[in-house]
Image (cartoon, rainbow, N blue to C red; front, side):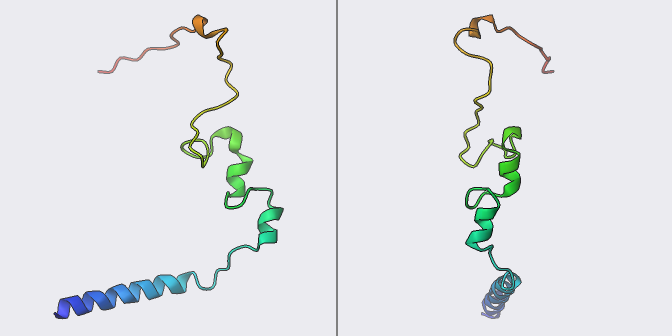
Length: 88
């Protein structure tokens, strides 16, 4: 019984401390977010470097594709192997 009470007290303490850590931080005002030039919720760094794959899946939509590729239906038959590595 004492262990459960101590565990519950610890959980309450951790939750209170985590709530207090962010209490003095205010989210940016809507006018500040609009001034940054980025869509709402997207950091300016991601928008500024969008052409450089700033996120693991390119963007927050996880598109994992690019529209600037030079491969299309007219030249796909000319593709060849560029390199080969032994997996040993």
